Length: 185
Image (cartoon, rainbow, N blue to C red):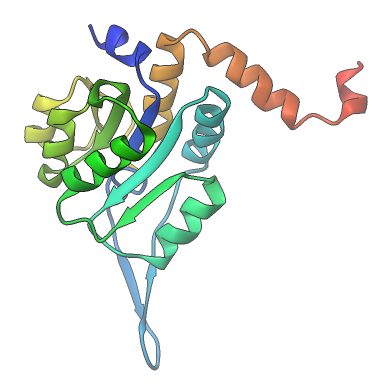
C-alpha cells in the first residue's frame, strides 16, 4: 500500500529539527546577538540531488526561523522554504496550490506532534526512526535512520525506488560528477 502511495509523489516536504537534523539546538552568545548552529548529514544532501534528478520537488516547513536553515536550503536548491510556520497545514496547502498538486501527490517527513496535521493530510507520511511514538503510529513508513542521520535520504530513496527511477537517478548523479575523460575508460 505504501509503495502505491509513493508512486504518486511529486513533492517531498520536510520538517527540519529532528528530521534534517538530530533535533539538538546549539546557541552561542556573541556580544550583540546569538548564533544558532545545526548539523546536517551529507547523505541527506546527496538525497536532495537524487530527488531533483527524479523530478521530485522539495520543501521545508518548520516552526523555527533560522539563518542556518535558509543557507542549507539554498545550498540544496530546495524549492520551498517556510520558516516560522506555527500551522504547518496552512503552509502545506499553499505549496500544493502553487504546484497545482493534490494532497496524495505530496509526501511529508516529520518527527513530532506539530507535524501530525500535515502527515494526516498528505499522500505518504514518513516518521524518522527517532520520532515520538504518536508520530510513528500515524506514519505510513518509519525510516530506518534517525533524523539528522540519513532519514531524509531514506524517504527519498523509498519514493524513487517505488517509482522505478532510483537506479537511473544514481547513475545520473554519478555521471554528472564524473569528468568526461574518466567516462571514456
